[in-house]
Amino acid sequence: MGYFLGIASVKRMQGLYQGTLVAQGAYSIYKTEAVKLVGGWPDAIGEDIVLTWKFLKQNMKVYFEPLAVAFTEVAS
Image 1 (cartoon, one colour):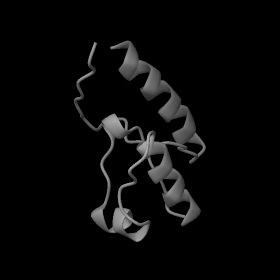
Image 2: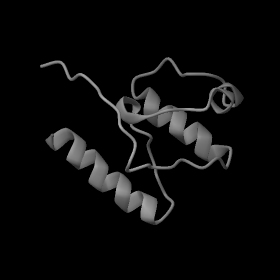
Image 3: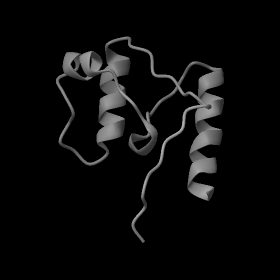
Image 4: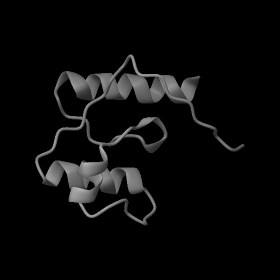
């Protein structure tokens, strides 16, 4: 729960300023056309950061939707 709350609070603050800097990979959905436009899914550590920054370089918008529902597994 702490993982979610930490991400959610930061994303809400960034969203207030329309400045989402990273679409967290674990809680993201992408338009296929947008991913293709920036050269596809990067094969890199931190691929969610790399992909988000590619969107921002193309003047695309990255949004946070607080009412969306997503699930992830965290290995311990």
